[in-house]
Image (cartoon, rainbow, N blue to C red):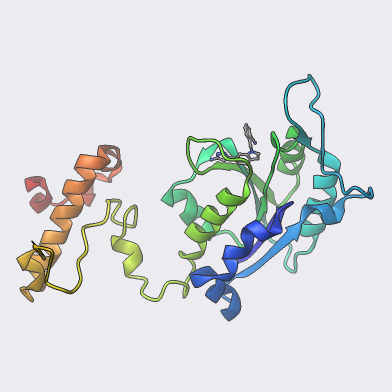
Length: 247
Ligand SMILES: N#Cc1ccccc1Cn1ccc2ccc(-c3cc(N)[nH]n3)cc21
């Protein structure tokens, strides 16, 4: 997968050189480039914003600069494959694991990180009409950030870890929260077997794999029912077996 990020703060994306995403980039599993939007400005002040039509506080990011940048980045495509243009914004579709799975199936993501009061609305309108480009405005939650960079980091991590070969043990993607099982994760424990008077549940040291699996399923169901009953409601009817009804 190829990901291009456009931002006026390239250093904000420095964490993408670290950990699993950094390793995926270095191993060639993920082709990721961060671009400074100001490289496509034409004035000596490298201006990317202007006052809003209709008045109001703050500044709006200029469509002409974004147009030059996105045209250049989208043109740089070896296979002419469809690209998903992601525009982080507080009014976008809220990112879920399902969204991440969809985006992980794309060949290419271009992430337009806005700042100020956002990007001129005509940019998204224009590229939505561009053949081979799907525009999606993405929110990472119902709170307001100062720009799209943090959202870009979240999206990239959630997507990259789903790419084949990025996570060491793909089985771990199944049992984690919001994973294939659609439940919250069960509680995990490691050594020592007792810590400050807190013992590890005995079943986990029993060596009985069937009982361990049942215990973990029960705890995942309990947690989901207690903290996120909405997730249970979304489960496919056949996702729960008779033994689950006990919880
Ligand atoms: N747009 C806008 C806007 C509108 C009102 C107030 C502040 C901003 C700041 N802003 C500029 C770019 C940008 C990108 C993403 C978010 C964002 C995402 C989530 N999930 N929350 N906030 C905010 C962003």
